[in-house]
Length: 101
Length: 215
Length: 312
Picture 1: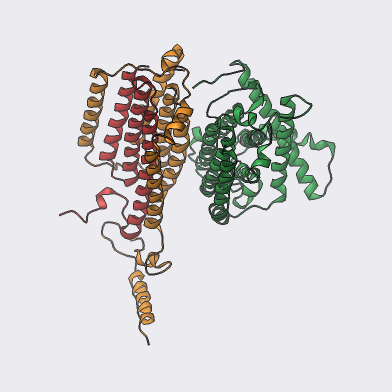
Picture 2 (picture 1 turned 45 degrees about the vertical axis):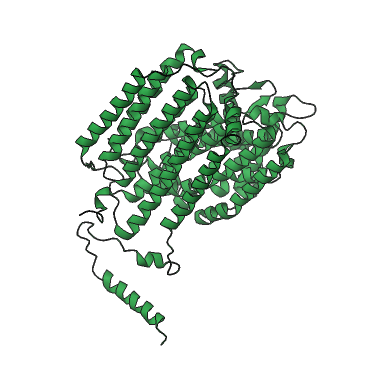
């Protein structure tokens, strides 16, 4: 369990999240992809804190801020989804066409 | 207890959790049932939280379990509410440009792994015997108070924004938000309404008009 | 993480399992006794045997099979719920020198146990692929998540005087004054949370009779026995947490620590089981509104009182 192993796993999670966020049509699934990306970032932050930063508390703070970011993203994402669905009946990204030429 | 002091079993545990996190993360986008997809994402998070526990970040790991469970529970409910195929009985392909997305995903993984394997990181492991939770508490409410408070205000703004965006009330009074929003259509693509729906709505608008004029 | 396991690895599951088994039997006996007292049929010694008789009947009963359930989740939900109860009980200290797992962040572990318990109930209702369990699971999630928030603040308030998240330290800090006296709002709020997470009595929106048994509507035989056993085990764990966090844990004059702990747990357990028979079941929307507009501000007030009390 070395720093390299933790960082490779974190990179894998970020890659999976990017693939999911870019390939899924449904807005909820895109949100899940973004959650996976932040998940990978948190793991990388935790790994670097434990192995390369000598336990500096700012490392843990970064992970906590990332958790707050996740909460914000989910809350606003779902609120937008509800608002969109009420006015336009869309829950797929392909349905958001008002800026399309 | 620093990560270097853990017994050999911890190495095996780490790889089990790591592979499980990646495997469940992949299955999130490949499963048909939406509720299962939300809970597979939860499983991925629980595995990452377990790895954080192995790295001696006690509070972070357990707080991650806690927060992600609640988030995924809410996400499962939203998925069933908004997705057409919530039970997953008919497999549907709901992806677009999956080829390009896969390329981007692989590139991101390759880039991150290259940095991880080839980069030079300082070797300063966690000193054994640090009070991880105590130092976190002192940092949050001491030197990094500004960051913490900003996060708090951001969360407050998010709460207000989420309630405003999804509230049924609008400027035109209670329940007018509901009236102002369109009822569900028969066919999302063509946008046609069931018979009689538009007539009802114009009747309602006429009523409002009568109310507005001083008769 | 320094999980100083005071018990050997083999002894931990044995101790927790024994306590949960005895506690679950006690819950069943108390429930049967309360039913008889409230119904007016009078107590009789066979109230001790009745739970065992019902359990034996359930073991031999046939299991219902629904159409295309998620068999894995359905079978695992009671095991997960019981496992969470065991994990929660493991961090509760029984004496100054003994706790099954002394985790630094014991209070946050309990937060995790409660939120995963809500997920386990949801899975138990979603997996049989049937209407009533699904509806019960959905309406329970709203109640469960609201109770979770109240629980967080109440448990943090308990951690403030101890200046630590570990339950050992929280019990140590009650040497002079029990938390039930220091923050009087804590124990009533905690009782509401305990009833909510274990969906017992007034908060029985997950297995309620108005949805013909809710998430247990399709459960029968050993499945039903496992689920009811898991619910009783979770009640026992909550009672143990309540005694440790509010009633001073193992502090007490003459008897040794574990005896006091057991007595306080049993008392809190009797209170919770009795509440199931004396308080009417709440309506989900009303309870959620009341929880967010009344209980949550009270929990904030409890936190403020605890904070002011903890100032040097």
